[in-house]
Amino acid sequence: MLNQAAVQEIILQALNNINDERGPDEQLTVGLDTRLFGADAVLDSLSLVSVIVDVEAAVSDAAGRDISLTDDRAMSQSVSPFTDVNALTAYILLLLSEPA
Amino acid sequence: MSQASFPNTETLRGEFVNLRPLAVDDAELTLGWRNANRARFLNAGAASVEQQAKWIAGRPASEYNYIIELTDGQPIGMLSLTGIDRANRHGEPGRFLIGDEAAAQGVPAAVEAMKLLYELAFDKLELVRVCGIIAANNTLMIKWQKYLGMKEEGRLRNHLSQNGQFEDAVFLGLLVEEYRKTSLPRMNFLIAAARAK
Image (cartoon, rainbow over all chains, first blue to last red):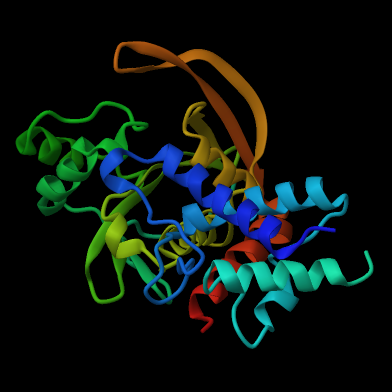
């Protein structure tokens, strides 16, 4: 079972993967309160997709089960999972706490 | 052969962005974008504003070339649908660039722009397939296009010259049924994610 720190690390690594594709003057500031998407966010939709794909793959590998971050349930959350790293972490832990 | 048509002089309107036809007056702006580092995956373009203006003026009537604008009119990128084959009903999305990345942060600009272009291709022009190549080292774009439903159909070895070095190109394609089943729901999800609080 992945814990909070492990999930956070997966998300931060996905953000760092985007920085690997960017030039030195285009680096994202990556942290737990990094706003992902929506108002005042740092990601455009290309980068958000990269984070979604990388996080889904890494969580599936580590947890031994598939998760989907882009279904109707994600959009029905009172706080969007893509608000920031903490919100996405909480949503992933919620998914992993339920039976596969 | 499909008889469906749509004027390439008309703006395509979305919730966050519009696609308005590229004009000669956009030469300086688009040249600036093309000369930036983020455009390194596009083919080499014009060397001057005059050349860029001439290139824009010379686009054939069969092409759909657009500026991606925020709904307040701020231009942030460009996107085209070219290579349209009416008999075989396919076309090629391309010349895709978000030139003003800061203005696109938190906005589903790229995804809504591509959605508008796919609506043009599949709904208005009744194409059954879009396809094209992406430089193999443009990993972010390949990941994005595959997430949005495109399938890898081949690899063209040493197909592109980038800064004096040859690079493979990945050939991607999307069928109309894949667009409706995969691309459209995922595009709608990403657009909805930008609305969420």
